[in-house]
Length: 500
Image (cartoon, rainbow, N blue to C red; front, side, top):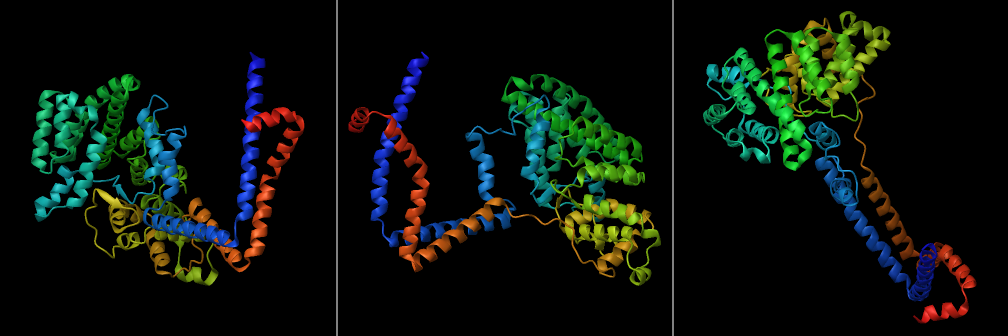
């Protein structure tokens, strides 16, 4: 058997070299007939095409913050070439893996859900009762409706009547229609998402909301355990498990927020830590920002620093909470004794310089925050969604963290002095976004082909000689192999194969 396989391998190898020899002769004849005008047209066209690709790549990067070629390669070409599909489950916790794979894809998004958003019924509606004005914009509520449909529904909801009702309820614009649908769903069975909706929109106090969330937790845990056992039985069960995971995480996070608002801060910290330990890769809710705020309320600055050490990383999407909390900890070490006059006379110490650098890094990330922390602009209720590095993120941060800055003696004074430029800051330490590889590659390709086109136009004969010499060098190894094959093979066999 091995003799037959070797014979076939030998035959096809010889056949390849015969075909190559014939084609190489034709290619050589074709290259000898080319004129310098052809090389000018070839290099000019290549330069034009690469220039157009460069312009499109640059426009796409400026608008979306990523490379188009890289995005297409990762999203479409890699699965076709047999690459690993990060969205497919690799362990028992399917949703955790999905969230980890989605981290990079959402890291460049600009609009994020506010991790500390208030309760509509128990908090936002108070403003409406007093002023008669809507506390949230239609755009913000529409984004929330999209979030609810993404996190709390799946394609198999029509199989369960209660879930089918809730699927329609999340699409309703009228709050009363949503609440009525939730009550109708609860009449059929103990539905976790129905209890969530009532806790968010119908409960008028945090105590009532907590009671409804505990009811939702009981139902959510049961659904989660059942779907966890069936998640590998097909795509439908996998989608159910992903939905049930999102529901469970949301409930536990909101219960921790209820404890924080009711003064049980240590209990809230424990619940948030347990939640992050149970779902370490599920970062869509930014639970660490809830944990940071609770730890700051306890004045547990060592644990705050430990959380920052884990999440204040260049590869992760930053936020005002991360940057300004890091600045607050640096300012806390020097703010009580800081004086602008003394600093201007003796210069800044190492600790003071670190604090100033941290504040400038935070201000460079979101320059809107200082005006709210220094109470130069009035605070309003934070929205349910924030624009990263925008005014809405500054409002949301200052609304919850202003008290923590006031608690640290001299911190706001140091922020005011640094922000106004009393202490000069020479070098920015905020990491700039690097250009994608394909922009640099297309820029280099465009420059190289443009230079070749110019040289070919100016020195056509010389560049023609160089082109032929380059091609000869490129084909030299194959020519060498062909000569060796011709010397080994019998001339009669070579002649017969050539005739074939």
